[in-house]
Image (tube, rainbow, N blue to C red; front, side):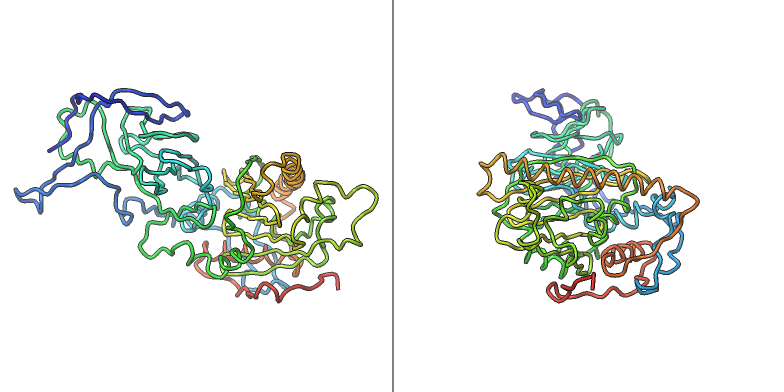
Length: 459
């Protein structure tokens, strides 16, 4: 039976999500019933229940061979001899177009956390490169993600965050349920060969790791699962208790930067090389001289012991903001970067994540989410101190990154050199980008057990 365009009589009402964050109750106008289509071109028919589409469909494949980034001339050199990638990687519109497919459609991307989806109908939306998405909790408690594109004429079916029973496109009112199935539309009278299953929202692969939600826009059947992608790095993150269930999400801040997304990553991955100059408060809390890097497949760690008590200033500079970073069991902070777009900063009593969202060749957004140990939930002053301290570090970094982008735009700069010890994680990141661009690493990146690389770079 084909779907009729006429209004369907319905006694109940439905709550629907419209872009703009509005929720409204209105009449159910056309309910999508199981559709039928000819079987093998004969007179027989098979019945189709509405469901999400096959991930292997070729419709989502997008060629990008027309773009070609500038080669990294010293990619095959060890870090001691290598120069950085060319500045065109950070400012060329063509490079940005290329990495939309080669980087952001081929890797697992962090998009949010499970604490934002607590009950059926909860959803949030976002955009990564050219892909808009909506993530929701279904009536069955399962998390699902879909391309936030109506199958009729491509308008978004949801916007922002909220809770809904159905998604409704604001353009022509096409409706979809929380499993992505097409559920109704008006004025389809006379339409032929129209099957509800074929009109479902395009699904996106979703997996979780601890508190974190990751999406993969690669719909190829050979694409790795999330834990296969993280490999040893994921095990190291578990050892650092970055997925601990006793952490509770409490806050999010957003920062808008006038720089390429890789500039922000480079800043994070320079082994705190800049900390003594740019972050005096942070430098008082950690032993910058003993800071060291550890690389895994798609994860890198930066680890530092705490500043020894005898080395801590006694002139009043050691304030509550700095103290919050060392409170707890005495272990030093551990900073993990998961390629390509998320950082996780783990302290004893709290944690934050930094989600990097590219917005063009010279703009990006960084969302920082904060988790604190459940024993600290009632201590609002302490929590404000944690957030204020990290906000200070971020504002210092935002200023630096914007300045770096200005320098990259200059004809006076193309490539630089690495400080081999502190910037090894940055070099590792560049090698991963090179692999996505050209299909192979330029130079093998050594990987180490996390406890075998503690040494003083000042020696």
